[in-house]
Amino acid sequence: MDKGMSEIVKGVSKMVLPFIMLFGISLVLYGHLNPGGGFSGGVVLTGGFVLLLLAFGKEHAFEFLPRKAAHCLDSLGALGFLSIAILGFTGGYFFYNFLDKGRLFHLWSGGTMILSNIMIGIKIGAALFIGIVTLSMARLVHTKEGVKYRQSEEEDKDV
Image: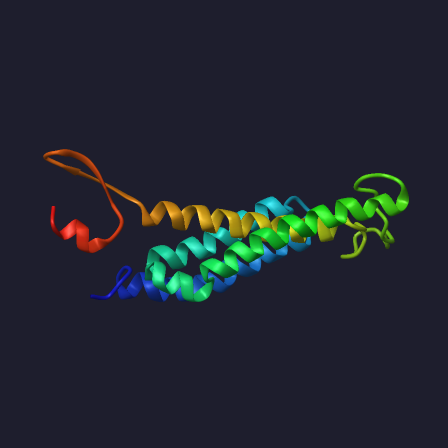
């Protein structure tokens, strides 16, 4: 049985996905200059993964971003953000901006802010993907006996 939605939805998803991912990456990278940042960019990146999940099924989404990789990225984002905060102690304060601030309106004008945005984007993107995939794998099925929890489609056929 073919997983996912129709060929039209799959085709449009393949065309739109790179633009969603690029938009999410640009929100993360330019968040210290424009409205955006790590959180909103991470949410947009997760939206791209959810599009894969809905259009092609969870197996294809796991090929694109395996569960172990998502867990590793989640931890990496948290540890990276914490490391940036602790490295601020080199200047005497927690979250001290120890990098050169650069010139106004240039990509490297935010000091540590761009690194913080990248780490938050990685953390939020991976954590939301894990949460949405976990929710998509769980099912509550209403039967005559009541509400039952099913984990596989094979169990749904018995109802």
